[in-house]
Image (spheres, rainbow, N blue to C red):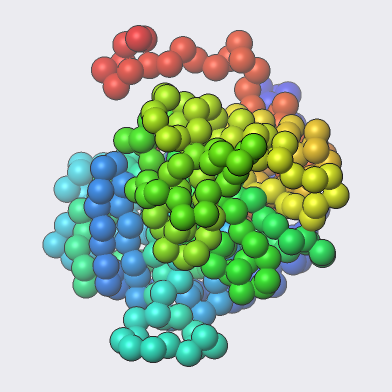
Length: 351
Ligand SMILES: Cc1cc2nc3c(=O)[nH]c(=O)nc-3n(C[C@H](O)[C@H](O)[C@H](O)COP(=O)(O)OP(=O)(O)OC[C@H]3O[C@@H](n4cnc5c(N)ncnc54)[C@H](O)[C@@H]3O)c2cc1C
Ligand code: FES
């Protein structure tokens, strides 16, 4: 008990030292207020909500996130209906998936966007509640929060590697990269086609290996942005790359000349990100990962989201969620395989 307490103290002290003053400065530009839902899409197990909120849309950077509060503002659908008001206390963090203009007709390139969207899969009580809200409902939000992805000097190609819903921050990031003159390429992996957060479409300019497409299918969202993409499915399906998204990345990297100015960016489940970091190290490529740690406050107060790094503990919410993959202490972040519980089905029985 005493040992655990002193360990906890050490974590807190280590975090306090890390860029505290910088976090305080960043917090100054955070908007806290209500945003109205202006569009909603539900498909399979996913939901996309678009909020009118010029304050967040005008200052957000790719890789940043927002907090959504489930405190009964969602008119007509009080959260208490679910019988667990305590579950409403903690805000739910979501990546900013896209910035949008709400103006009709032609919009000039330098006009600030007025809306942003989030994309999420329905997991627990909060995401199910959010997915029931309708357009015009006001919701309390805070953002933009955290530190997003950063550009590296001289980079020409950014490969955005996503596992499942980890694709969420990449439409915003890909559009932004194009504006900076960097070519984005998006690789998305899922277990089956039913688990894809976006629809597959025939790739117009597929990624090739030995003159053949690695995947004949691309992602509709990115195809419409003019960004090349490819899909890996673990369960074989005709036309798709068969394997994990990191294997797809390795297959594509094998077609590239050494010395190409490539940077890797990842978002998805931890084991996938760890595998991505290993491939990046092997190819000596820079790599940034967006980490998803359970959060309390989301603004650096509760110390609830420590991330072990080679430079001590950092906070996922204010130092991240994006970290240099080569600085994350992966072996401390992931539990040893012997401690991972056996997979449990929805009925609570091992398969
Ligand atoms: C920086 C960041 C960005 C995220 N972006 C997205 C996104 O764009 N799309 C998306 O689908 N999901 C995203 N997540 C995960 C998302 O926050 C959780 O899926 C969501 O909070 C689950 O809420 P729930 O009430 O449905 O689940 P419950 O399990 O009922 O939640 C209980 C508590 O655990 C927390 N929690 C549960 N799962 C997670 C998780 N995986 N990560 C962090 N906290 C969790 C909840 O916030 C809540 O406080 C992100 C997480 C972080 C940290
Ligand atoms: S969530 Fe509270 S400090 Fe990060």
